Image 1 (cartoon, rainbow, N blue to C red):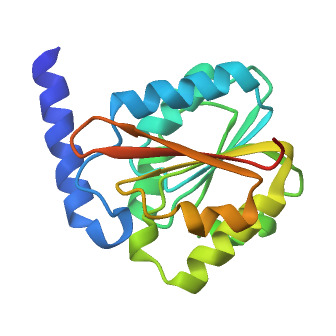
Image 2: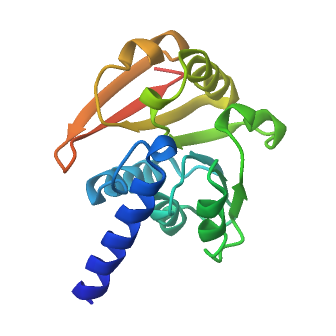
Length: 186
């Protein structure tokens, strides 16, 4: 079993490296990040969840493992090859969308309770970044949460104008990940 996990890790690293301009990472997010996301899902029991930048689906699977029956998970991924991999996850709650997060309003007509994002903020334009954050904040329900995973802590000021409360914690992994939690209501 360990040999298969190592092989999967290497295959994922190759796919991420080949798509570095859109993934912004060499590896999938860490198990620590997955556990933190699982906690958010378990505590808040959201019915409508959105994931931005699903990659190969490790966070997608974590969300589905902990989301309640009858919920929906809308996954936005701009890489069409990654979308094909995501569509292999057999779960009726999963809706894979091959488009940018900035187009969320074209696909979802209901309020979202949790947005989980691994969009590489450093690789997109400031204008597009601001649009995505603004649109996401507007799409969230009154007590909605946006969780952003990044590899630096420089983005607090980009998030603060759109949320009532922005906090983050550093997750010690390789590389170090910053787990931002943004809420509309305090």
